[in-house]
Amino acid sequence: MMEFFNLILEGFFWFLVLWLAFQIFGGMFNRHIETRIEKLNAEIEEIQKIYKRVKIEQHYDTFYLFDADTDTFIGQGRTMQEIADRVRGEMVLNVMEGDPDVVKRFRDTFPQTDPA
Image (cartoon, one colour):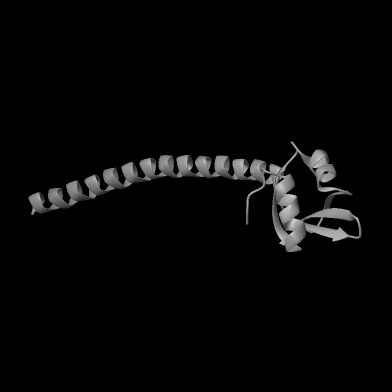
């Protein structure tokens, strides 16, 4: 009877040891994953500051750029080159919406813009 009690006690002890080890290593792994996710989210925010999805509109002889996600005004110009000179170096633009002819002319002016 005492051997059976010792066997149960020893099994319970090793169960606690293994459970504690899994908790410690699991916590360390979880913190590592959370830290990695925080770094990736910070990198995504930095990219979003630079990389803009835009829509372009032409009214008479003026071109207007708007953020496609928030519909906020980015810039305007009478020529594509004028717009390019104003925003070049500040952000990379990916035209998402607009008149196909205007979008094509815009992409020809902005060679770094991703094709849709």
